[in-house]
Amino acid sequence: MNCELTKHQIDFYQTNGYLLIENFLNEAELSFWREAVTEAIQQRGGKKMPGSDAKLGEDDGINKDSDYYGKVFDQMLNLWQTNDAVKKIMLDENIGKMVADLAGWDGTRIWHDQALIKRPWANPTSWHLDTPFWSFSDRRAMSIWVALDDATVENGCLYFIPGSFHSTSFENPGIGKNMDAVFDFYPQFIKSKSVAVPMKAGSCSFHNGLTIHGAGANMTNGFRRAMTCAYMPEGATFNGIKNILSDEQVSKLKIGDLLNDNNQNPLIYSKGGLS
Image (cartoon, rainbow, N blue to C red; front, side, top):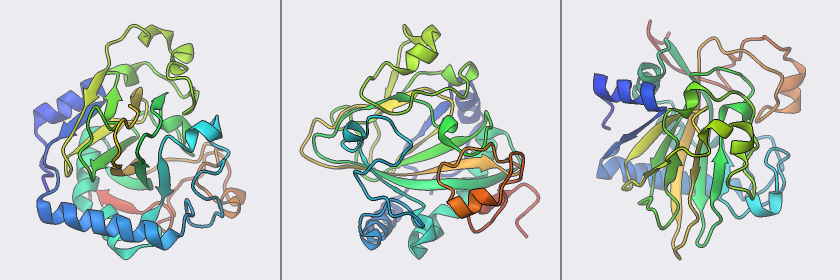
Protein backbone atom coordinates (compact mmCIF):
# COMPACT_ATOMS: atom_id res chain seq x y z
CA MET A 1 0.00 0.00 0.00
CA ASN A 2 1.31 3.39 -1.02
CA CYS A 3 0.55 5.16 2.26
CA GLU A 4 3.43 7.61 2.76
CA LEU A 5 2.32 11.20 2.20
CA THR A 6 4.69 14.00 1.23
CA LYS A 7 4.40 17.57 2.50
CA HIS A 8 3.51 18.61 -1.04
CA GLN A 9 0.58 16.17 -1.09
CA ILE A 10 -0.69 17.35 2.29
CA ASP A 11 -0.39 20.98 1.23
CA PHE A 12 -2.21 20.24 -2.04
CA TYR A 13 -5.07 18.60 -0.17
CA GLN A 14 -5.36 21.40 2.36
CA THR A 15 -5.47 23.94 -0.46
CA ASN A 16 -7.75 22.14 -2.91
CA GLY A 17 -9.82 19.81 -0.74
CA TYR A 18 -8.97 16.68 -2.73
CA LEU A 19 -5.91 14.56 -3.53
CA LEU A 20 -5.25 11.83 -6.09
CA ILE A 21 -2.82 9.04 -5.16
CA GLU A 22 -1.77 6.86 -8.07
CA ASN A 23 -1.07 3.16 -7.44
CA PHE A 24 -2.39 3.24 -3.89
CA LEU A 25 -2.79 -0.54 -4.00
CA ASN A 26 -0.44 -3.02 -5.62
CA GLU A 27 -1.85 -5.83 -7.79
CA ALA A 28 -2.20 -8.32 -4.93
CA GLU A 29 -3.88 -5.76 -2.67
CA LEU A 30 -6.26 -4.71 -5.44
CA SER A 31 -7.22 -8.33 -6.02
CA PHE A 32 -7.89 -8.78 -2.28
CA TRP A 33 -10.04 -5.63 -2.12
CA ARG A 34 -12.05 -6.69 -5.17
CA GLU A 35 -12.70 -10.18 -3.83
CA ALA A 36 -13.58 -8.91 -0.37
CA VAL A 37 -16.02 -6.29 -1.62
CA THR A 38 -17.63 -8.69 -4.10
CA GLU A 39 -18.14 -11.29 -1.37
CA ALA A 40 -19.49 -8.72 1.09
CA ILE A 41 -22.03 -7.42 -1.44
CA GLN A 42 -23.21 -10.93 -2.28
CA GLN A 43 -23.69 -11.69 1.42
CA ARG A 44 -26.03 -8.70 1.78
CA GLY A 45 -28.67 -10.04 -0.58
CA GLY A 46 -29.48 -6.54 -1.79
CA LYS A 47 -29.79 -4.89 1.65
CA LYS A 48 -28.11 -1.50 1.78
CA MET A 49 -26.81 -1.61 5.35
CA PRO A 50 -26.93 -3.60 8.60
CA GLY A 51 -30.00 -3.13 10.73
CA SER A 52 -32.15 -1.86 7.88
CA ASP A 53 -34.51 -3.60 5.47
CA ALA A 54 -33.96 -0.95 2.76
CA LYS A 55 -32.78 -2.50 -0.48
CA LEU A 56 -30.99 -1.22 -3.54
CA GLY A 57 -33.17 1.02 -5.66
CA GLU A 58 -35.57 1.86 -2.83
CA ASP A 59 -36.13 5.29 -1.34
CA ASP A 60 -33.87 5.60 1.71
CA GLY A 61 -35.34 8.89 2.92
CA ILE A 62 -32.00 10.65 2.45
CA ASN A 63 -31.65 11.44 -1.23
CA LYS A 64 -34.15 13.32 -3.35
CA ASP A 65 -35.62 12.06 -6.63
CA SER A 66 -35.36 8.40 -5.62
CA ASP A 67 -36.33 7.09 -9.07
CA TYR A 68 -33.44 8.96 -10.61
CA TYR A 69 -31.09 8.29 -7.72
CA GLY A 70 -31.62 4.54 -7.97
CA LYS A 71 -29.99 4.70 -11.40
CA VAL A 72 -27.02 6.81 -10.28
CA PHE A 73 -25.20 4.02 -8.45
CA ASP A 74 -25.71 0.96 -6.28
CA GLN A 75 -24.76 1.82 -2.71
CA MET A 76 -23.92 -0.67 0.03
CA LEU A 77 -22.94 0.74 3.43
CA ASN A 78 -20.91 -0.55 6.37
CA LEU A 79 -19.69 -3.69 4.68
CA TRP A 80 -16.98 -3.77 7.35
CA GLN A 81 -19.64 -4.71 9.90
CA THR A 82 -20.73 -7.83 8.03
CA ASN A 83 -17.59 -9.15 6.32
CA ASP A 84 -14.27 -9.91 8.01
CA ALA A 85 -12.15 -9.27 4.91
CA VAL A 86 -13.65 -5.82 4.41
CA LYS A 87 -13.21 -5.18 8.14
CA LYS A 88 -9.50 -5.93 7.79
CA ILE A 89 -9.30 -3.45 4.91
CA MET A 90 -11.26 -0.67 6.54
CA LEU A 91 -9.64 -0.83 9.99
CA ASP A 92 -6.13 -0.47 8.56
CA GLU A 93 -4.23 1.92 10.82
CA ASN A 94 -2.11 3.11 7.89
CA ILE A 95 -5.17 4.56 6.18
CA GLY A 96 -6.25 6.13 9.46
CA LYS A 97 -2.90 7.88 9.73
CA MET A 98 -3.12 9.16 6.14
CA VAL A 99 -6.52 10.63 6.95
CA ALA A 100 -5.22 12.23 10.16
CA ASP A 101 -2.24 13.74 8.36
CA LEU A 102 -4.41 15.21 5.61
CA ALA A 103 -7.17 16.45 7.91
CA GLY A 104 -4.85 17.70 10.62
CA TRP A 105 -6.42 15.83 13.53
CA ASP A 106 -5.03 13.41 16.13
CA GLY A 107 -7.46 10.50 15.94
CA THR A 108 -9.45 8.94 13.08
CA ARG A 109 -12.79 7.18 13.45
CA ILE A 110 -14.75 5.51 10.67
CA TRP A 111 -18.12 7.09 9.99
CA HIS A 112 -19.18 4.55 7.38
CA ASP A 113 -17.79 2.68 4.42
CA GLN A 114 -19.71 2.21 1.21
CA ALA A 115 -19.34 0.40 -2.06
CA LEU A 116 -20.43 2.63 -4.95
CA ILE A 117 -21.12 0.83 -8.21
CA LYS A 118 -22.15 2.59 -11.40
CA ARG A 119 -23.89 0.08 -13.60
CA PRO A 120 -23.71 0.30 -17.40
CA TRP A 121 -25.41 3.46 -18.66
CA ALA A 122 -25.87 4.82 -15.11
CA ASN A 123 -26.98 8.40 -14.49
CA PRO A 124 -24.46 11.07 -13.49
CA THR A 125 -23.94 11.91 -9.82
CA SER A 126 -24.93 15.55 -9.41
CA TRP A 127 -22.73 18.09 -7.68
CA HIS A 128 -23.09 17.71 -3.92
CA LEU A 129 -21.42 17.81 -0.51
CA ASP A 130 -20.98 14.83 1.83
CA THR A 131 -20.72 16.14 5.38
CA PRO A 132 -24.24 17.64 5.58
CA PHE A 133 -25.67 14.11 5.31
CA TRP A 134 -23.77 12.89 8.36
CA SER A 135 -24.63 12.80 12.07
CA PHE A 136 -21.76 15.08 13.08
CA SER A 137 -20.60 18.47 11.82
CA ASP A 138 -16.87 18.95 11.33
CA ARG A 139 -15.30 20.97 8.54
CA ARG A 140 -12.34 18.56 8.35
CA ALA A 141 -14.37 15.36 7.78
CA MET A 142 -13.32 13.48 4.68
CA SER A 143 -13.52 10.33 2.56
CA ILE A 144 -11.27 7.98 0.67
CA TRP A 145 -12.44 6.73 -2.76
CA VAL A 146 -10.61 3.65 -4.07
CA ALA A 147 -11.07 2.65 -7.71
CA LEU A 148 -11.73 -1.09 -8.10
CA ASP A 149 -12.09 -0.61 -11.87
CA ASP A 150 -10.50 2.05 -14.02
CA ALA A 151 -12.52 5.23 -13.44
CA THR A 152 -12.56 7.17 -16.71
CA VAL A 153 -14.22 10.22 -18.16
CA GLU A 154 -16.39 7.79 -20.16
CA ASN A 155 -17.61 5.63 -17.26
CA GLY A 156 -18.13 8.18 -14.48
CA CYS A 157 -14.92 9.34 -12.81
CA LEU A 158 -15.02 11.92 -10.02
CA TYR A 159 -14.98 15.67 -10.59
CA PHE A 160 -14.08 18.30 -7.98
CA ILE A 161 -14.35 22.06 -7.68
CA PRO A 162 -10.94 22.84 -6.16
CA GLY A 163 -10.88 24.90 -2.99
CA SER A 164 -14.67 25.01 -2.63
CA PHE A 165 -14.55 23.48 0.86
CA HIS A 166 -13.05 26.67 2.26
CA SER A 167 -16.36 28.53 1.91
CA THR A 168 -19.16 25.95 1.63
CA SER A 169 -21.36 25.30 4.66
CA PHE A 170 -23.62 22.47 5.82
CA GLU A 171 -26.44 23.28 3.39
CA ASN A 172 -26.82 20.68 0.65
CA PRO A 173 -29.38 19.89 -2.06
CA GLY A 174 -28.54 16.18 -2.00
CA ILE A 175 -28.05 14.03 -5.07
CA GLY A 176 -30.89 14.49 -7.54
CA LYS A 177 -31.75 15.13 -11.18
CA ASN A 178 -30.34 18.63 -11.48
CA MET A 179 -26.58 18.72 -11.80
CA ASP A 180 -26.47 22.41 -10.88
CA ALA A 181 -28.75 22.43 -7.82
CA VAL A 182 -25.78 22.91 -5.48
CA PHE A 183 -25.17 26.34 -7.03
CA ASP A 184 -28.51 27.55 -5.69
CA PHE A 185 -26.80 27.23 -2.30
CA TYR A 186 -23.32 28.29 -3.42
CA PRO A 187 -23.71 30.67 -6.38
CA GLN A 188 -20.12 31.88 -6.01
CA PHE A 189 -18.95 28.64 -7.64
CA ILE A 190 -21.25 28.57 -10.66
CA LYS A 191 -18.48 29.85 -12.93
CA SER A 192 -15.72 27.79 -11.33
CA LYS A 193 -13.63 25.38 -13.39
CA SER A 194 -14.11 21.77 -12.36
CA VAL A 195 -11.34 19.17 -12.43
CA ALA A 196 -11.86 15.62 -13.68
CA VAL A 197 -9.93 12.97 -11.73
CA PRO A 198 -9.78 9.77 -13.79
CA MET A 199 -7.77 7.01 -12.15
CA LYS A 200 -6.55 3.50 -12.78
CA ALA A 201 -7.88 0.62 -10.70
CA GLY A 202 -5.94 0.52 -7.45
CA SER A 203 -5.48 4.29 -7.30
CA CYS A 204 -7.45 6.41 -4.86
CA SER A 205 -8.47 9.92 -3.99
CA PHE A 206 -9.23 11.67 -0.73
CA HIS A 207 -11.65 14.57 -0.54
CA ASN A 208 -13.01 16.86 2.12
CA GLY A 209 -16.71 16.34 2.83
CA LEU A 210 -17.41 20.01 2.07
CA THR A 211 -15.65 19.96 -1.31
CA ILE A 212 -18.20 20.26 -4.10
CA HIS A 213 -17.90 17.08 -6.16
CA GLY A 214 -19.81 14.79 -8.48
CA ALA A 215 -19.30 12.11 -11.10
CA GLY A 216 -20.18 11.71 -14.74
CA ALA A 217 -22.64 9.28 -16.26
CA ASN A 218 -21.46 5.81 -17.19
CA MET A 219 -21.47 6.01 -20.98
CA THR A 220 -20.17 2.46 -21.34
CA ASN A 221 -21.53 -1.09 -21.14
CA GLY A 222 -19.21 -1.95 -18.23
CA PHE A 223 -19.25 -1.40 -14.46
CA ARG A 224 -17.40 1.31 -12.54
CA ARG A 225 -16.82 -0.04 -9.03
CA ALA A 226 -15.35 1.91 -6.12
CA MET A 227 -14.92 1.27 -2.41
CA THR A 228 -15.10 4.30 -0.18
CA CYS A 229 -14.99 5.21 3.48
CA ALA A 230 -15.97 8.37 5.34
CA TYR A 231 -14.02 9.49 8.40
CA MET A 232 -14.57 11.73 11.39
CA PRO A 233 -12.18 12.97 14.06
CA GLU A 234 -11.96 11.43 17.49
CA GLY A 235 -14.14 13.69 19.65
CA ALA A 236 -16.88 14.28 17.04
CA THR A 237 -20.34 14.80 18.55
CA PHE A 238 -23.91 14.03 17.53
CA ASN A 239 -25.69 16.83 15.64
CA GLY A 240 -29.21 15.38 15.65
CA ILE A 241 -29.17 13.92 12.11
CA LYS A 242 -30.00 10.21 11.95
CA ASN A 243 -28.20 9.31 8.68
CA ILE A 244 -26.95 5.70 9.06
CA LEU A 245 -27.74 5.38 12.77
CA SER A 246 -30.54 3.08 13.88
CA ASP A 247 -33.63 4.33 15.69
CA GLU A 248 -32.32 2.60 18.81
CA GLN A 249 -28.96 4.35 18.58
CA VAL A 250 -30.57 7.75 18.02
CA SER A 251 -32.90 7.21 20.99
CA LYS A 252 -29.87 6.94 23.25
CA LEU A 253 -28.17 10.09 21.93
CA LYS A 254 -28.71 13.75 22.55
CA ILE A 255 -27.14 16.58 20.60
CA GLY A 256 -23.57 17.09 21.75
CA ASP A 257 -22.97 13.48 22.82
CA LEU A 258 -19.70 11.90 21.72
CA LEU A 259 -19.88 9.46 18.81
CA ASN A 260 -17.35 7.08 20.30
CA ASP A 261 -19.02 3.65 20.10
CA ASN A 262 -16.30 1.40 18.70
CA ASN A 263 -18.88 -1.08 17.49
CA GLN A 264 -20.35 1.61 15.24
CA ASN A 265 -17.49 4.06 14.69
CA PRO A 266 -14.19 2.32 15.40
CA LEU A 267 -11.09 4.34 16.22
CA ILE A 268 -8.55 3.19 13.62
CA TYR A 269 -5.72 5.62 14.34
CA SER A 270 -4.58 7.68 17.31
CA LYS A 271 -1.51 9.86 17.41
CA GLY A 272 -0.86 8.55 20.93
CA GLY A 273 -1.28 4.93 19.81
CA LEU A 274 -4.25 2.60 19.88
CA SER A 275 -4.82 0.91 23.25
